[in-house]
Each structure stands twice: as structure tokens, then as C-alpha cells.
Image 1 (cartoon, rainbow, N blue to C red):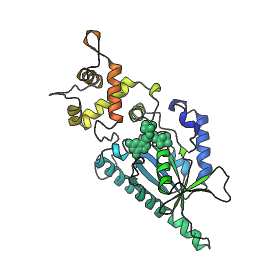
Image 2 (cartoon, rainbow, N blue to C red):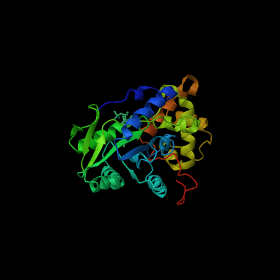
Image 3 (spheres, helix red, strand yellow):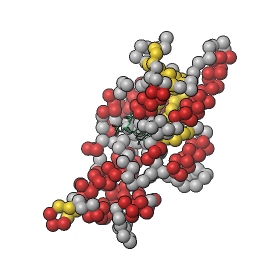
Image 4 (spheres, rainbow, N blue to C red):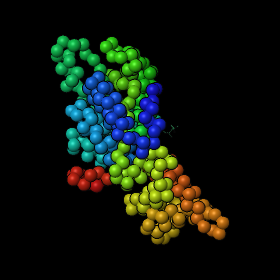
Length: 299
Ligand code: G4P
């Protein structure tokens, strides 16, 4: 699988030049496809979205795949899917590593491409599969999804006539052709809370964010939305501190992350919190709420 070298750049190095290049690469490939699959992290569906997606894809039909659904809160994933549907965007929950939800994703993609593929046949063309590409920010699971979809089709790839040799199409079971190179989008940077959520979920390199702030905010969000999990995991008895930093210190104490004199080693405590969250040990958690203007309740 070709990995775009943009992936290796820390998020803060998405300079305007990189963004322009990424956008141009996507725009070139957009001409080849009927549908785009926007890959989001089910734990942070709005924070993992690219702020300019609509502008980049223009009127190209879009289906949303909420990936890493195995780590997200199932009730909130359902609420997010309902939200996207209300916006006229079909959506499916997927787990790219285990291959869950892929049949539904393929079916939604085909359905969305149908007006285009039908029109093609009506004009005398031979029936052809829906053509699509995957778009998403780094680490959201694009390569995993492509590999999984390719695996399901025994990784058949073929050059398509009329398309530059570098473009490979993967024939996906169920009748879909997928570009094997995903479009890599930049994340939202402006909002620091979004940045920290991207950090918890591993979308941003470890060395470019304040891990203490990230762990503290994560604990605060968990305390607000999933207090019983926090209580259970770190064996808090009675009241838990309210502020993130105090929570972090308390977690450090519970886990014996101490230095001489019984002082909490905050760095160790941060690692405990972030690693356990990323490994799903704090339970299935979704950190982004469905936008308030949507009917159907808060996520
Ligand atoms: P990208 O191409 O969008 O940059 O993402 P990539 O597929 O490389 O996936 C990034 C990380 O997310 C990988 O973990 C991958 O295993 C994990 N991942 C992708 N999809 C899912 C999913 O549906 N559920 C879960 N739980 N994890 C998912 P990694 O730690 O970077 O590598 P590794 O653990 O696979 O070695």
C-alpha cells in the first residue's frame, strides 16, 4: 500500500503548502470516482472531520464511515448515524481492523453511486461497479480499511485503461472499485479542545501536544460523561476530584506512579491514562456530542 508521505509529518506541520498539495491530489482523484467515503473516528466524529471537506468535494456524493466503532459508545454511534442521515448523508459504523460493518458500507456506497452508474448504462455504457475513494485525516484508519476491503476481494488490483499507471483500483466484493490511495486530509487545528481530542485518540503525534493537558482534559470529560467507568477503573471510593489535574494526580496515586517523597509522577500518570484510553480499557467512549441543532437528542 502506498502511504502518502504527508502522513509522517506531525499535524502542526500541515503548512498551507501541504494543505494545497493534499487538496490538489484529492481533486485529481475526485474526477475518477462516483462517491467519496469520508472516514471519521467514531469516538470523535466532529473533531476528526476536515473543516474544508464540503468545499473540496463540492457536489460529489459522500458516505460517512464511523471507524473504530469497536472503541466508541454504541448508543452515541447510533445517534451520530441518525444525525448524518438527517443531514442527507448515509453513514455506517465500521471496524476496519476486524472488518465489521463493511458490507453495509459497500451497499450504501453502491446505492449512492446508482444514479451515476445507471445514467452510464442508459447512455449505452456497459454496467460497471461504483467507483469510490476514501478520505480522512491521518490515523483514522484509511489504510486499515483499504487493506480490509482489498482482503475481502482477495486483493485483486488492476490498472484501468485511460488512467495513469500509478492508479490502482481494488475490486471489492459486492461490486465496488476502490482507489488504493486514500486522500489524506488535515485535521482541524484552530480549536484547542479539538486538538486535545485528536491527541487522546492518537491522531496527533505524541511529541507535539501537551500530554498533561490532554490527560487532564480527558479525565474531566470522562468524569462528566462516564463517571462510573472512571470510578471503577481507578477504584475511586466516594467523591472524585472535579478538576482534570487533580484527577490526574489522584489517578497517579491510585496507580502508584510516585517519586521520592510520595509525590505523584505526573508524566507516568499521563501515560497510564492515555494508554488505557487508547486501548479501550476505560470502556467504550465517545467524546463528541451530536450537534445541538439536530433532533433526536444529545449524544
Ligand atoms: P491511516 O491510514 O488513516 O493513517 O490509519 P491506519 O490504517 O494506519 O490506522 C491507524 C491506527 O488505527 C492503527 O493502529 C490501526 O490498527 C488502528 N485502527 C484502524 N482502524 C481501526 C478500527 O476500526 N478499530 C481499532 N480499534 N483500531 C483501528 P496503530 O497502533 O497505529 O498500528 P497497529 O496497532 O495496527 O500496529
